[in-house]
Every structure is written in structure tokens, then in C-alpha cells.
Image 1: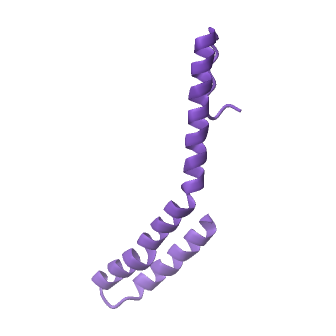
Image 2: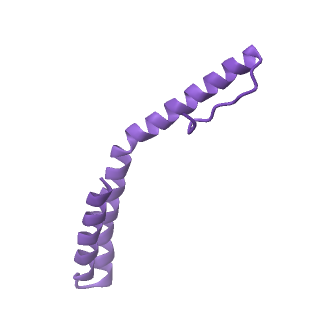
Image 3: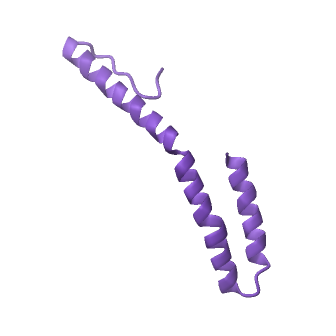
Length: 80
């Protein structure tokens, strides 16, 4: 996915550089490049955010269960 983002930003930067004025270049870069890219990353990053939240929640539940049973070992979300 990131190669698509890099390619799109490359194209929009070149488009912005060929605009007739600085204001038009900034607006082109913003509305053709940055905003769609941010939306794409946000939409396709959702599953990753949900997976990280689920792993953190499971780690907290495991830690709470271990604490209730008297265990001292803690497991972090990045430990598998």
C-alpha cells in the first residue's frame, strides 16, 4: 500500500510544481495529494488499529487474570 502512496505523492508534487502560481500549486498538492492520501491511509489502516487494540485488550485481560491468581508475570501486546 505504501508504494501506491509514494507514487501518488510523487505525481501530485510534480503536478503542483507545474502550476502557474504558488497558490495553485499549494492547493493542488493539498487537494489532489495530501487529503486523498491521508484518507487512504486512514481507511486502510483501520484493520491494523483494531488488531492492535484487540491485542492490548487481551494482554490486559491476561494480566488481570494472572494478578487475580497470584502470578507476577506480565505479558505485553508485542510479546507473543
